[in-house]
Length: 144
Image 1: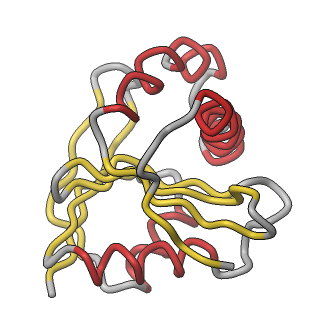
Image 2: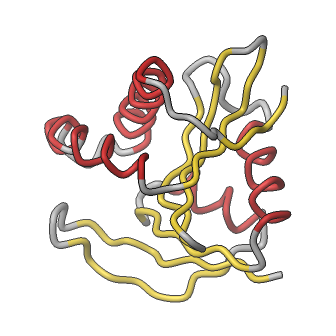
Image 3: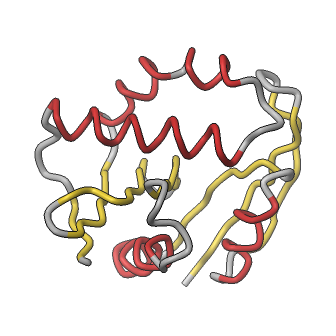
């Protein structure tokens, strides 16, 4: 497996990323209506163009990705069937080598993700309620 920055987001790549994104959100956030995520797809798709996208490739197939906007990790997702194999850690290792600090938001009820980031030295800096979902989000930060 290898991590690469996507220099050119093709339509085919975007479809793969969106499928992984939607599956990841539906699996990780059963406490949020599926329609919320489905309604976000066009906005998320636009965000890819304004961000730096890191992908993990296995046999030239995208199996995971992270989206960075300056120092903000807008999302990190792994394809179903490839989770719990170190792909998220691989992505964070690449991000930490390119950035001196990383901020992110994660839903408090997504305890697996919260633990994952804490295990990678992210600290909780703030808590707030997301007005769109009425769910508590944790603001987390890692600094070199």
